[in-house]
Every structure is written in C-alpha cells, then in structure tokens.
Amino acid sequence: MLLAIDMGNTQTALGLFDGGELVHSWRMPTDRSFTADELHVRLHGYFHMYGMDLDVVDAMAFAGVVPQLNRAWRRVAERLGARTVVVGPDTASVTCVRAKNPAEVGADRIANATAAAKFYGSPSIVVDFGTATNIDVVDAEGYYIGGAIAPGLRISMDALTARAAKLSSVPLEAPAHAIGVDTVEAVQSGAVLGTAAMAEGLVARIKRELGAPNATVIATGGLAVVIADSTDVFDVVDSQLTLRGICEIYRRLNG
Image (cartoon, rainbow, N blue to C red):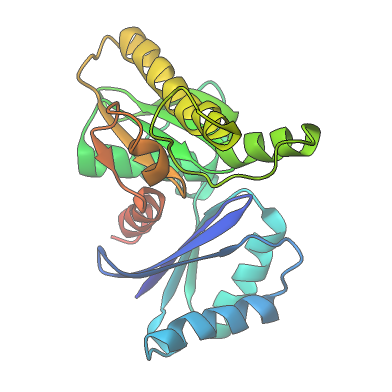
C-alpha cells in the first residue's frame, strides 16, 4: 500500500491507498519539532485504530512545504523499508506544469492540479482552503499555469481576534444571514461569507481570463465544506484532492 502525506503549514493529511483507492485517511498537526520517533509513534497509533500493522506500507509519497519534516518522514520510511517519492522537481517528468518558474510551484499545488485534470477534466480551477487559500488553475491542455494565494480563513480570524480585544474567537461556520444580528454572526459573515465571496470573485475573473466559462471548479482543503455551504461557485467538493493527486503522481512515476 501507498501512504500519501500532504504536509501543510498547519495540518498534515495522511492517506492510505490500496492501488488507486483511498482506504483510510487521518489528519494531524504539523509540528516542525516532531522527530522521526514521534512521527513513527503517531503513525503506529493511527494504523492501530483500524487493526493494521505498519508493514502494509511499502511506499510513501510526500508533498509539503516543511523541509525539516520531509527529512523526518524519510527516516520513518527507511525504518519501514518503504520506497519514497517527493513531489517536486524529481517528479516533473510525470506532471504538467507550465509556470514562469516551475521550481517555485508548491508541491501541494502540483498535486491539486494533477488530481483536478485526472479526475475532473480540463480546464479546471481548484480552490484549496488551508493555512493559505490557494487557487490553482489548469488550462485546457491539462497544465498547471498559475493561480492566486490569499491569507487563509484561520489566519484572518487569528489576526482579527488578536488585534481586536472585544472580538473573542467564534465558531468557523456560516451564519444564516449576511447581515449579522450580533457580534458573532457579524464576524462569521465577514470571515466565512467574505471568504466565499472572494472565491466567487477570483473564480469569475479567472474564467474570463481563461476564456472558459464552463471550467470545473473544485473546493478542497480542511475548510472546504464550511465555505462550500455558503456559495454555489463550486461544482465539486473533494476534501481529499491533494492526497489523490499525490497518489496519482506516485503511480505515474512507478508505472
């Protein structure tokens, strides 16, 4: 089996694939202080939840933005005797990137674009709601060509509550109305509905630039479901898109 690992700045998503089928998935905090020992113990616990042993893993594929954790995960793979693949320059031969500087494109964005083109067709637009809100654009030929990066919803909320003393942390959920009747609803309207409106506006502009009004729009990331409930801009919500892209890249590289 393949263990796909998507290391974000805030959370790390893990997906266990049997062939191309995602059979189990987990999320854990991304902690740059984690050692290989700590990662190994956590991984053992996750597998134990489902009565599995780690020896079912014969390959591990990584996409992420935290180099020190890449090294720690590699050591875990070595202990398990698992093959490793890191999405990026080493996998360029099986991915389609047409950007000004391909080496600068984040591995998670490459995985998103790969999965979008494979499973939902081209052209397509991925809106990934994570630490940052990333918008990844796939052209009609299936190439990642660029996109947009905005502060993520949680970052925005943390900044707001840190600098506005009277605004305590509120649940990240969509309010019933855009006009908040109290402070909690007002903050939710600005944060959740505001993020949805930003996605709507950027997607509309991107569609015009692409000349592709019918491009498929996909929501992914930890907060995708929250935002998707507040807008009809998305054709698909696929919270596991990045993991599926990592798996697809691994399969292409290994026949």
